[in-house]
Image 1 (cartoon, rainbow, N blue to C red):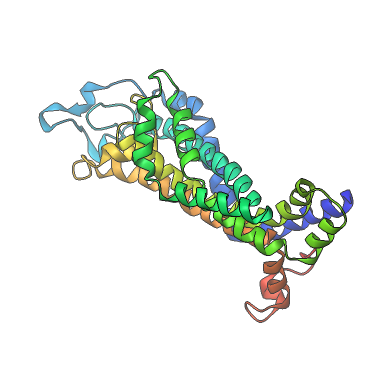
Image 2 (image 1 turned 90 degrees about the vertical axis):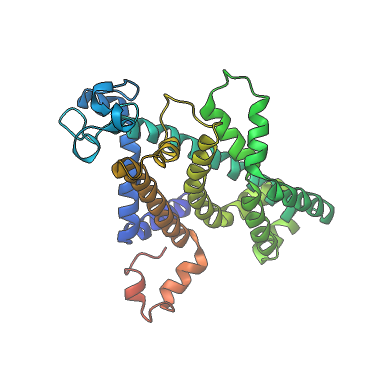
Length: 323
């Protein structure tokens, strides 16, 4: 059994490496992760930090526009400075990556855990459980997330860590989509012969769900989770714009974008840099999620092997890649 599992995992890795887009997306995500983790070291290498004000680098007569070309780019400030404050933009982008990615990934984990548990219980449970859980999911999907997020922050102590608060608010209020996908997939999977055989063989429901259903649910769940990460980054930006997200001087891409709307004419680079980071992150996660879905989905691999997509196996998948 262990040998079969190892061969299956090796086959997935081979299929991922065979897709140039997947390799490129993984490289981009690795670079973003290194930039976020190495923010203190890189900022120290530049000789700046994300919170120090540099009043002499902004033109107070023009409302705080950075002095110099391209937002004040210089040898001391590699990407210029922030309008209105003069804080180093390179350092704030790096530290902002930490907060934005942490909030997005943490909220996605919460959404996936709750969504998988509720969706699996609804699809694999009794009709009564399915009805109750489905109606509860519908209620959660109909809730105005931003309004409830504002209400929740009113009862949370001011000293509560804001990144953790954002993770909990976004994750606990927006798991309905994951639950619906898992429920729909579970309803289809439990009709298959191998699942029915496991149930007739006397296996308890939790074991059938863990050993038979969860592996088959991995592909759609991972794909949907990859899409939710950039959506959660935007959600963090929206909450920061409303004043209930990360508080200054802590940096985040969402906060930078919300304040950049005032400066898009005077300092376009201040808008383009966080937007470019967000765009690259969204594209890389989307491509990586699609590649993982293709590698994990047995039906997708079957279509690739028989050549239904482009007419030939060789063009769809390298020889020897199938397990």
